[in-house]
Length: 337
Image 1 (spheres, rainbow, N blue to C red):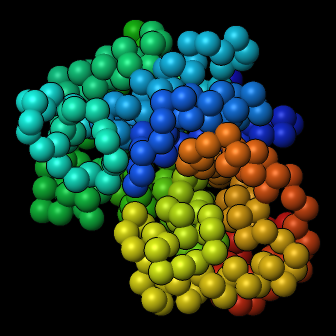
Image 2 (image 1 turned 180 degrees about the vertical axis):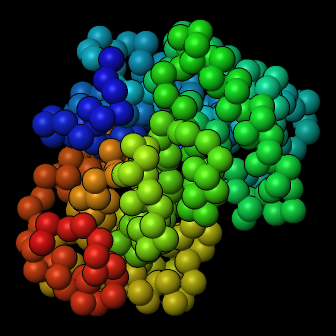
């Protein structure tokens, strides 16, 4: 099996990963058949990573990915899961709650970073995926913005219980690499002050629209510490995937007028150079030496095919210069210049 470093190999699509939220019906439902076909298209095109979590569709994403893997005869990419939530059964007729997933499985997600909760989450994910081991296990959604006043307690539990339990799982051969999967760059810096991680999956914080992971020094710190970064949310939860419109989402919420205006200017700038904005958004994070791969939340075989086209697009150096001059990309961010 591949290592995290091998994501950036000579293989064309190896550094691209399939994010499993869309497969789990994020925002809108898709059929089981479409979900499985999407995963199989990604496998056929040589995606280097598949990432999922119990939270995505309350087990639905993992189950669908497991079905696709079962019939796959080729080389398996890195498989990444998340821990930190457990799924509690919902009694028939009881409301599941609105967690952003359409028609999820009949379970309610609940944060649990205890040793028992981590083990329960890990074993349940393995069962749904139909595998006996995974490559990457990420502690999911720690951070002050997520947990508010509970952050200090959650962070201490992360250090004292979650990480030791994942280390135990690694010693058993169930997990190969350990890290965190978050939307907040600040907690990444905090974690690296206290512990050693193999990898960080960071969503939305190193994109064409915003680069706090770079400006804060986090990515440079990861390079120095040998921590591999997987940049997720490179389309900022959909805003850069299609032309900005009133229905566009940003950070998993409706985009504000200011954000829409900025995204619109970025979109126009890319098109002036004859480049699909999605291609620039996809390729930009991969130019940083700390970034081993990216995650894209495709939900159909056609979207996977589009990703391959954007991945292979040749982007002129002038576009990167224009994006820096326009204030979209930090002047010292690595680009093709």
